[in-house]
Image (cartoon, rainbow, N blue to C red; front, side, top):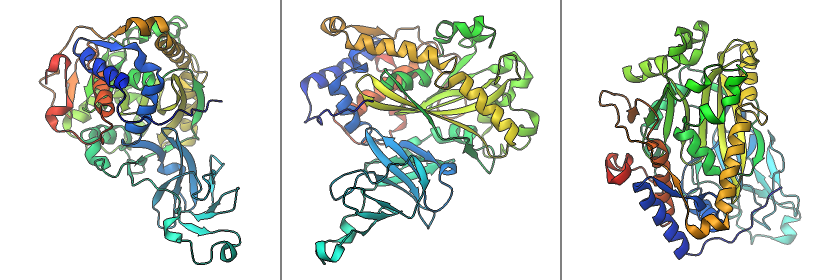
Length: 467
């Protein structure tokens, strides 16, 4: 439905530089320029400076388990083929023929030995290497260097707990260095069983007239909205305690705009330990790789929501599949895929541990779709308010007057007794996690520099320059 065809940014436009500076200085005072959410120049620069240099999630091992398996995915505006070759290696390739740039793959997923361009028939193997073309001898003879004309491949591909990430910039730090302390939280969320997790179904995809950053920022630390935006969920008694969700929310900042909300759901009863997984599932978990702080955290106040910069978000919460049913934790991975200024596609996967039986897995899937599918009771609330932000960012009145958004909740300091990774906050008020998102955004946008792992003192930057 939407096709973005803006030209690439040329150098540092003064308007863009001024806006980035306003974001940085605004965060010192708890303010954010509204036009960051829907601006053509900002969007073009994000595609180049953020999605062109950061690590982006593209697929899960369980989606491409066999040789020749592939899926089509997105890195910014680029469509990529994620395929497993005969050596087991995952290749991430730009879905554009090197001859005349037509797309070589038009299926969302499948299994194949090669990709053949429908325009002139140039053919590539599962690794993306040039494999041949019609009338090759007559058309090219020995003039075509086969090694030089394979599909373009992402220079860096790596995985964590089965989640496959790709980076388009060879200068960016390797994935594990890039993620830093976030790895420990990912191990606690996704790595509790040797068989790991599996995608239950292909991602659901739908268009939202909102900026991709609205979703990413919301999931990085905003539990404050729940008692208002999702009040209907409580009024319907689907989740009676929804108004208290922000009260029991804690914050976990891993630095570099990778952060999680942890909910102390054990206040609702001991059955909600470990996200509410039943004893027969918990008994299969391996906690040996977790330090004591992380083990206690996932028992009592497990990470339920989070964002890994730029657009990978996670959600796990106990919820019934139907009103009045038994709460069971579902696991959702969502990608806020940019499409155009103020427009995104929301890609939503449902995951379950591979050790869980099929009947329970189906229950988990239904719970996730019921809450956060395209017609989910929570999803409809979130996407509606995010669309309002994009409208405000388009407003000539707001732009003329340089309107700033409010990020000035009272500050709290991190818990000095916390011995786990990152910094832990006793509640999510203070908007520190959202501030961290915007400071990372500004850093990447400043000069189009390469995303690298930061030094410890660089990772947690508070308002007013505090460390």
